[in-house]
Length: 339
Ligand code: FAD
Ligand code: A2P
Image 1: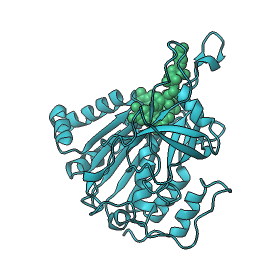
Image 2: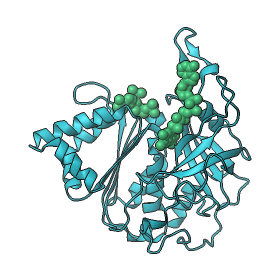
Image 3: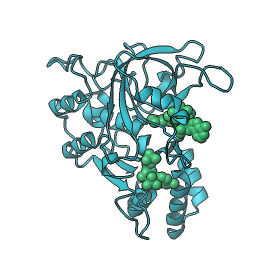
Image 4: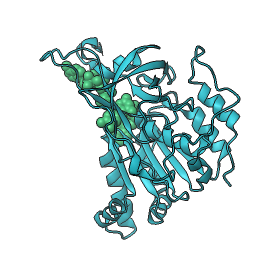
């Protein structure tokens, strides 16, 4: 059974992202309910587009930390941004970031890039005054140079990954309601499928369900099942937190990884996330039949493979895939945010 989480372990885990210059959690913490709706699952007040392009919010970076090992393919950073409580959001939403500077082609300001928020609404420090992003630095591999070409690197992701404490970030949003958790029924099962930085919203979900002492966490008695696909073990994201949640709530949290360059699928090819989900297809289908919500976040490229896999399973079960999918969408059990 799910019991109250040991706050000390969670605070220790959250403090891993708190720089030495900021006060760590005091022993006396405020009740973890000051950002809840009434009742907590009422979504009629979810903030959307509070700040727009013409009048963006200015946040300040608290810390920027590389969170992958040396053998990861690329660099991914966890960035904590201070909004002083003035830019509330819910788990599953995104922030827009307007990188400084102008475009070379027409001298206009760079456009907004969206980033899924990786913390719960309370932030990693439970103050309700910060939010975190999980950003992969976009680089450009030049086949002729046989090296990265810095002139073609991604503008916004490099700005964010190079940010330091105090860097000002112009932000918009919060955006999106597609990835919200329907919290009304606390026994709802969640199936969360991610590639790479697609983990971001789920980190927020998992903190909300298992790391906090909110009314939502106290009530939750379903099963949250995370599938994460990354290249190798060095590229895993937030594994320490997920292991902790698994240890504390073995009956409520499940974790499966697809390590594409370390594992092989049943056909001997790369272990992609759709292959890992397929291994549990019967359970996944029966959970969905019983009302579970399924989420996909990360690489756009995973969706065709996911759909093919689900279609194959549905056909083997004698189900009409299109009808099956239509039913899930109609019941709002199907959530996709890919980029
Ligand atoms: P850009 O400057 O926009 O460049 C895009 C790509 O083009 C880069 O790979 C760059 O190297 C390449 N490029 C640049 N110039 C050239 C050239 N001349 N020739 C060829 N290639 C070139 N990303 C995350 O990391 N984490 C998230 O949580 C996240 N959440 C998202 C949520 C949503 C809803 C959406 C829509 C997107 C999300 N993204 C996320 C993606 C993010 O918005 C950006 O698209 C991403 O960071 C790349 O932006 P950039 O400014 O760094 O790259
Ligand atoms: P790989 O890079 O080995 O092809 P990224 O590192 O770009 O964030 O990607 C996260 C994971 O998604 C990696 O394991 C990557 O595998 C995998 N991936 C790449 N393309 C697809 C795809 N079409 N379907 C599913 N997973 C994919």
